[in-house]
Length: 127
Image (cartoon, rainbow, N blue to C red; front, side):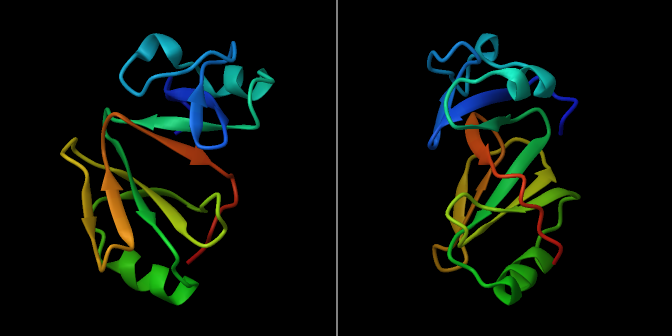
């Protein structure tokens, strides 16, 4: 993921360009490299834009056991798994073909593969 030029800064869950102006999930000119996003001081964190083969399952309000069960159902290759910003969920980044977003599994899971910003915590989860 760090080799992609799809990184942005963040203010809460709102994407920012490294200069502090709003970033857009559909305007690549507002995205940058991982190295550049790390040295920027805009906002209070950073994240990545989905697309070009990178998708994310956003599992909300799940225990580690529930997350394990849901992850076992994922057919795409898993790239990275981390705790979400709330601390009560899990982000599962996958290699995926772009498609419309979905909500499944009793409304506790969302799947995104394009035109979407995901705030990164860096709190890797081993499930």
